[in-house]
Image 1 (cartoon, helix red, strand yellow):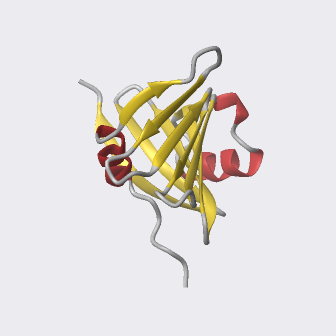
Image 2: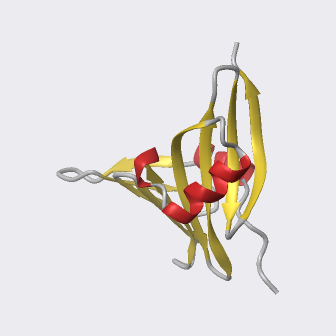
Length: 128
């Protein structure tokens, strides 16, 4: 049985409860969460660990032109009229990695979860 996937709400709650410390001399930022876990940010990669040092998740942020071809084809087949503006690849123990793809057109912005050949609309905003 797979563990529940990391939710955006959990990420926001975790990030809001951090205490920041900056590792001087490099681009690595380290945060301690309210529950004594840690988050390490280095460039476009964020890693989270629980208080025992066990890996919880990794988020890698990429520009749209780095979207893997199979993920791009899946998105294009379902959302052909949208421009891909960015993405994140999310990994967690016991679960398959997936992508959150940010897309937009003239009127809307969408965030779509892509896992294998399947897509799931996560967020849908109307531009104001």
